[in-house]
Image (cartoon, rainbow, N blue to C red; front, side, top):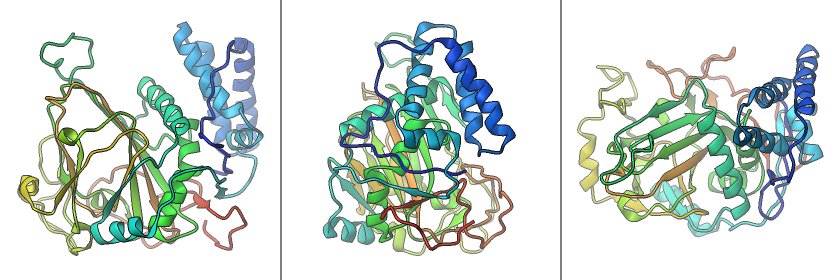
Length: 386
């Protein structure tokens, strides 16, 4: 899947509203053009054009047509975006354009390497946040086959609007949601990832949307992300970005230094706490009584506001309380990055996300189509990644 970077400017908002949507015939034409792209193997992005056009034509309500129009505007906004949509550039390396943001300093890097996490205040411009909100809205209205959507009872004293206690998550939609693609491959996020990892060529792994509505009674249990993934790389970072205020009472918790203690835990299922396997394979141990970490003195709370980023290592133990007593939503998008030498790996359980091997065998470098490298210097890369 080929792509180039998009200059998100000073705010990163590449999905501005227009006054009048185009006639449906234009979007229908894009559907036909998408088929043409597919015939000539112009990447998978011809399928995006066909898919978006078809959904617009088939949309029933004015609100849904408006949503689909905003999605197409994000693709057609710039010449670079058109190249992204059509897959015409022919490169695996994405060039990232500079945009004003809070710079990562040496203290941030030191804290990240020492503790396995760091909170970066005011790191993301408002324009990118607005764009991501639209992306999340679209994702929730058009989830992927890998999504989970758990509905619970409404919060006490609240109206039964169907959202009480709802928990939604989905991932790996950046190739069909331009707002996610732009944030992942342009502007401050890949630069932050590169600075924290000490690389000029971070590899984008995937994005993850997590939405907790008021009244969600289930907490996110203590876990490491690394065991769920089918990759091997100790140089990595997850950029956890809230789109709503996350006060201390419901903030993400991280266990300082847990990324570097050499321990790797068999993952437990979130729904019932059962381990994925009954016997730990070599290099792993069972995560027994994870609730004990709530009282561990190494625990740190990471309250955050929109624009802040909680950056943490894939092996950092972390958790989040329930929203049972919290009246606000908690929408989060995490963007996950690796060093460019990350390798494909196998786990003795189903990985999450459940990527297919795509022809890779353990030890192979990840492919650039699904896991693109972002070139922070904007120049040609000398790497020979597939």
